[in-house]
Length: 105
Image 1 (cartoon, rainbow, N blue to C red):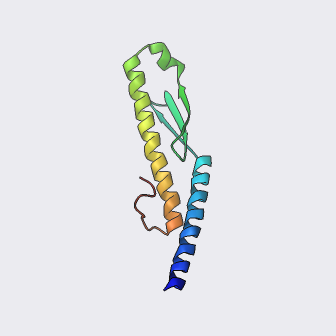
Image 2 (cartoon, helix red, strand yellow; image 1 turned 90 degrees about the vertical axis):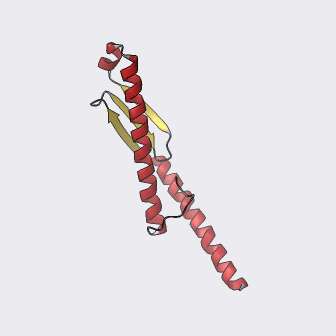
Image 3 (tube, rainbow, N blue to C red; image 1 turned 45 degrees about the horizontal axis):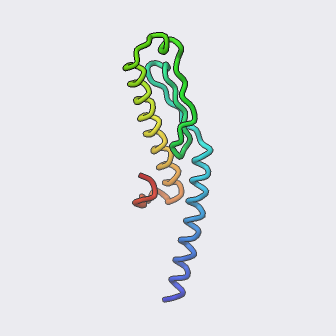
């Protein structure tokens, strides 16, 4: 019985190492989205850190705060969705398609 426990522990350690590698790789990946026909562009990495936001000069010149806010919120929501998809794809490759609760929301 203790022999099996040692094997399980070793597998858990290997999975933890692989998970750390996935996290490191995700931090290096980029996700880009745009809203408003490209008037707002947002880039994030694979761990949901916003790296840049670009706002078209024409949108700024419109001086329409509400439209600008809506486009930024839309871009943030879309980039979050795409990062989540990317993380799920990476985890699926690691786990062989088995969904493990709690690894990624």
